[in-house]
Image 1 (cartoon, rainbow, N blue to C red):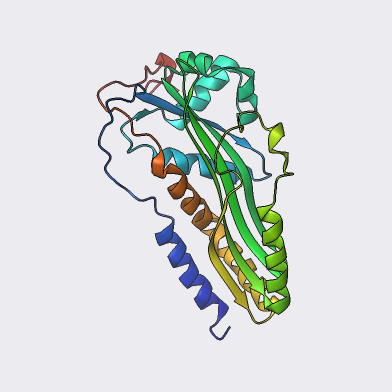
Image 2 (cartoon, helix red, strand yellow; image 1 turned 120 degrees about the vertical axis):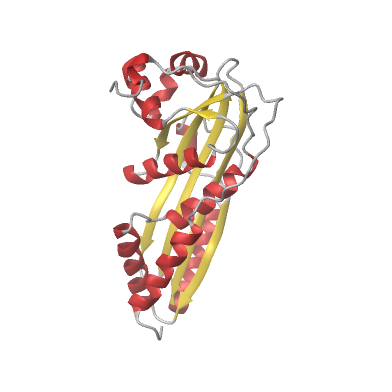
Length: 265
């Protein structure tokens, strides 16, 4: 690696900031969709990264705000769930039903979110950043699933020839992850794509130490700028939301309880 690390890392950060921007597109209303109002529920976090879970939920919420729905603000969702049901975490949502959530939140659709991987593994030989999540849109009136999608995205940097071999072995294991404990997570059944991985960056260095130095430096810089694993997260969400149903548009909006009104907090 001939160039100084800081030059390469700053170039990588610039690339991240451009690549992570959510694509904006105009969607025509779909009058056949009966769901006008939507709430994105707290995420079921199967990882140890709390900030990552918050970021994935926020980024998903951003991507459906131009899809012709009235989307309930996340803070209002969280406050209503806490006050009305004592729910603060995604893994508590199986204690209630979509119908009850719709009645409490005043929405016709709820999005269940699941974060399955949010990892940055650096060993020198094998260095991988991976993000995997799943989502489903449920109509609260009927409890029927209108849409669901999952996906994993990873970036890989191998260190030397030994690292290339180890990377190939790890990829075989990831492609055969049928033993993962997804069965213990309620609500994941039937969500397509949760065992699918997409590699967006695959590289290698001559020596393991160079790969480790680059991976660690990239982690430090992206964390400092608040964009850690955002390249993988953005790519995953961009793909997942491609076929998210478009709403009917129109003037309807969720009924905001008095306690959530502006100036009353």
